[in-house]
Length: 315
Image (tube, rainbow, N blue to C red; front, side, top):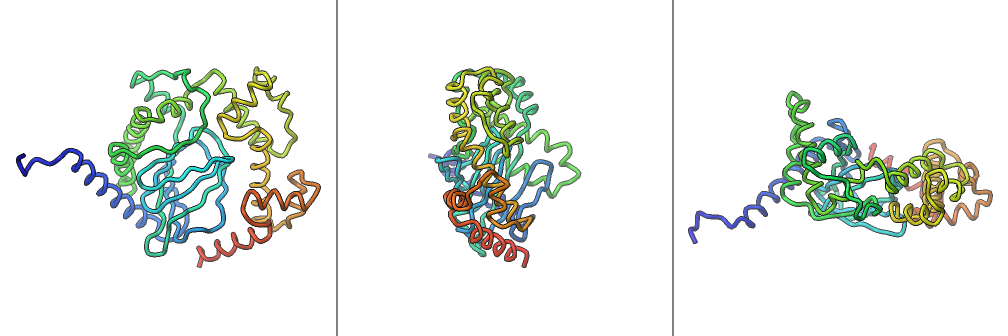
């Protein structure tokens, strides 16, 4: 073989390595200290300099998550998803997630990005690419991890470069975002991404039910009434909801309530009994047990550690 001719697989490997290095350098430069920064619209960069801290609770919207350095584990109900710079996380619904950085130090911090995915953009790219919203597997969980191929990584890297090119960003960002959506549609999670654009069927009704539960999380749930409202039998609604979110409707609501109680204690300085009572827990002991099961620590111990972590970041 002519020594000047490179093995295509070797060239792809070197290209991917260079992109990961550049991505990490650009995120580290843009976010010099721990925290999150929204740079371009819909693009959030994140930096964490230690692992094993308190579980991070968040209710997400459809997005693509890519790690440039380090690793993370995300919890959805009883399911755990771990990923690193060689995989991407795709979320196609509004879900209450728990996450924890697994690999990060001051010298080598965890660096990542999150790109919001707009349903209208996904629909437009689907039309241009000739994709249809397949009914096959239409009721799958709204989150998964897949290998990050070179083409998708390259597009993500070019998107992050636009942070330093404000004159070019208004023109190029929509184009690169559409390329990212196209590559996701072509990948192994293409069917999952198509669900964002589905405007009918069971999947869309479940997505609407999720939105309603998020909005009315502090009210009692009547699954029979919800199923009837969305034109489904109670058993069908229950199963489709669990397939989509990984949780039953009651588990979904409980996680939202516990996250809100955590927020109330952290930001409004409520004690555990009061926060739990506002979320419908009449028994403080029951609330404490549920809270510890969700976040790994009793309420006030968890809040104390969250405050200490926040003070460390601010210092």
